[in-house]
Length: 315
Image (tube, rainbow, N blue to C red):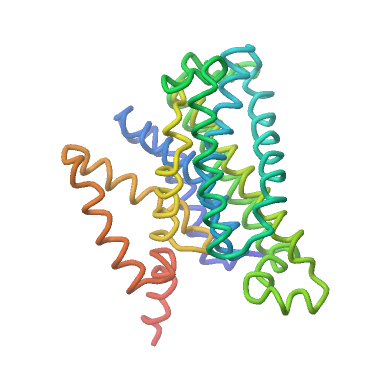
């Protein structure tokens, strides 16, 4: 599927802006904030695959995010495995765990599925906290080294790590775009719209949900692994239920089942949280009304609003 020329130009300009960002902004802290938003957005894209295109809400996304981070962190900090091996290994391990959990979780649907995955997310955090000899317990895992060099390419500077994370973000967006525009993506949407009708035309709804859940977990694992490596640390809170709910907020504000939604929502809300950092006790108080307004007046999120405005202008 080819992009319309206007959309292609817009995406090219956005990509160019992202590439130039660390060169134009002389503020390392701001660059660090954007990096954390990028890696979180990768996991939010995974959440959107499950919720937006298959119609099931997984509340274990934060848990998978933590598993990816701890998997990469343990391999690199404890066993001195190269980043380039630890990263795919973390993604594979998270996807494999997602497959196993999905075998049980996907016997349920709707609210029961959400509750089941919420329980899984809580259990993951408990295991992380109790398994002190491996994960560091409540203190977390420290000493995760930066990515190793590839020939002349070094990744021990903030700018280099920004471009590395940007590469994986762009790759994630491309993979999700290719997926939702493929036959597999259309199968996801068919199951989301009517599971009974999908079964009637020969679609295996169970396997479709399972595949979606595994992809969702894998993207969460990728985001978590990058998050841990960038920070050099990962703690239980990074895989907690609050992380899952923040991802859900990012997605709802940005736009469900939208290619731009996860990134737009993550960047905007992260920026808002940083703006209100001096008023930490009011952060959630400010975020709540914004979420309510978006859900009521812009049910397709801010990315959907961007599509709606040109249509109204033409009228």
